[in-house]
Image (tube, rainbow, N blue to C red):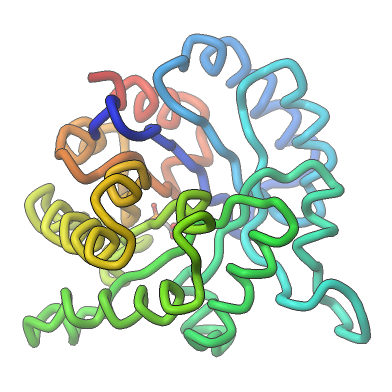
Length: 256
Ligand code: PGA
């Protein structure tokens, strides 16, 4: 983290979990802790059906609500899809785009992801853009090239003004939901490489203001060590964000 230049973001990715009454109880329990969390932005990315209830429950707190996906068109004949405008009108501030589960299970390409990022920006949402390598790529020693390539696809269509509104999450696929975490050194190496690419594309001032998160089995036990690194500005947290105590511990670990 480098609090002088950028915001720390602790974002929960609830995936396809929880029901609406659990959302209300969760936020009611998190509320007093979130008021103390002045040092970071706390975001809960909930299923579409839970957004309105979450926004209502989080009213008067600093907790921001996000979605986990959006469509790239504004409206039209896209049965089952939800547009970025719809999310914005429901009270979302953030949207996760390009999560590896979307890329792998739902065939999302770099082109689709780029279009979704642009749709989210146009709707006034803050995209959390996910990148990260599968295990085979790490074993071949090509992680940095792989991640740079994923990122370049989006950057090539993104202005310096818009990139400031994007949060990037580095999520090695082999660490997601596996209990395996990248070491702080591995995660820092990739996050630093991402910042270098941002610097060469947009210049040093823009690059140093962008928050880069780590995701992949982040939990209360490893968060502080990861977040102590210069280029890791927060976490995108799956499993450990589903229980208030572990999320609160991670938020506390984000204090320098
Ligand atoms: P995990 O998920 O923390 O359960 O590994 C992270 C993510 O998929 O964003």
